Image (cartoon, rainbow, N blue to C red; front, side, top):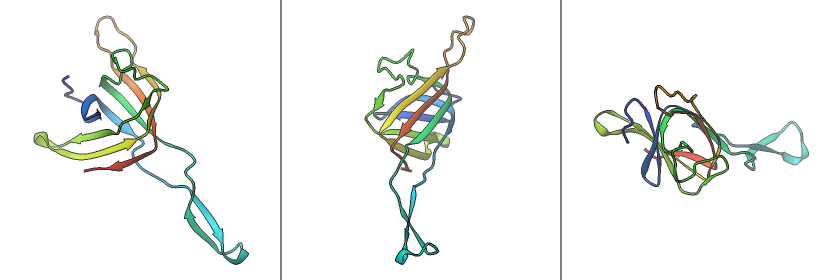
Length: 138
């Protein structure tokens, strides 16, 4: 599958599944809870809290097998992605500029561009995946 023109590559089971022009939601945050020392309300000590929501990645303007209309694996909303997925940002000369991975993915939504009989091209307009955590691997 030729993915020229797509700056970000999506890997699943170490195989390129799609290329995208835009990805948002890469980052992390924690929930914070507070302990009040000695019962005093003016002395709050922040601690790591219980995670109440998953992270969400949005992949936009792409092409490849994340499209449910082309995928035999059934990448449809509600599909749990049980294996680790990677986002690769290629550098020059076949190198990797940056790479991220995430676990516990769940496809939340997808949409493709309007169908056009003259172009015959089916482009993924947007796919949203919730995950349990994202981390930099390179």
